[in-house]
Picture (cartoon, rainbow, N blue to C red):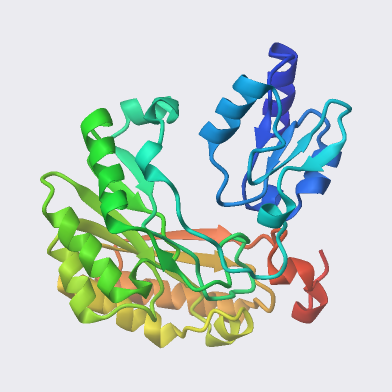
Length: 317
């Protein structure tokens, strides 16, 4: 990130360099102070690139653009709209996205050469897992987007860019079963429109999974994280190893391909808990209830409870 910012400023001295992501949003002032080449820090999920581009090109100012911190002409750090973008605790977000007037000409050019795209059908996750870095989305009750607008976005991507595969980025796609089934049925009406979703092992039911499998869902991802109930409990995951086995088995028996995420090195991890995770993964593969798995090393990202309160988890950062 630092290398790219430095390269841009050297090559295009008058450019406006914008940084975003969960960590920038959580620590925007610090980000701008530590990276003097950065002009804007995105702090809010309502931020729209086209608003910034159009406003800056028209007026040369950023004070009316929602969802950012920026540098004024004297390089002082300013908030464009404190009421909208100041993050205090776990406020409930607004989810209107304005898909009707999206300027698809400014979508990344990679979509023109790719057969897949990521979309969202809802925003939010009420769960408060101690390791989760999605600081703008966690701790709030999920709210679904207007389904007609979601499907309009999908149809535009299909028609304009030839996208055939959609990755549903919702934190917990099946959290609202009726919403998940509605989306699945609408996807099933579209020829050659396939999709992947992700969810929790304690948020699935047989009826919803059957509707998904019958309507072009080709892969369901579960956040397993650990095979140790002790680790899952201390990380506030709210699930158990038994639920991991039950949910993956149900999904496979219904006909879905199954993917599981795992995390090694969480606070409290021992040789025993690692072995429990390895044993559970092995059982899932040997039983045919899991097709793919991804193992990552835990990192205490800013915004997570572990990063804010490491002493509570017995670690030092």
